Length: 100
Image (cartoon, rainbow, N blue to C red; front, side, top):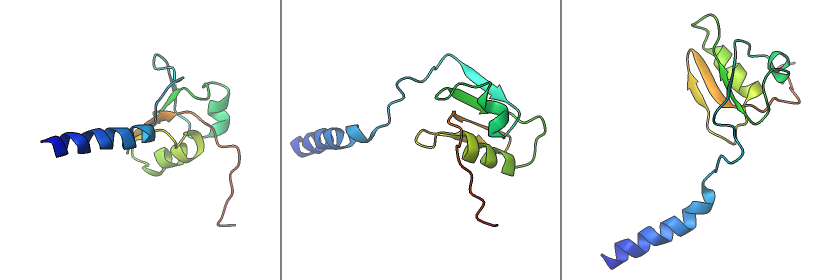
């Protein structure tokens, strides 16, 4: 039993610094949008706040991925469904089209 307690204590001490703490995020406000484009969301939503992408049409599974790539701070968790997504807003500053 002592070995298990020591291992548990050691894991808490070692892995606790790896946790991402969401300090400074406004948990009371969420900005909703129907657009995946950064230009449409930049003036309406606060950077570092929650943003929910809720498209007006359902079924295009690429739109939530495009929204996440262009609008989300990927150092935080992202919630994704085939109908939308929720994340912490951080608009992309540069987009490079590798296919051109």
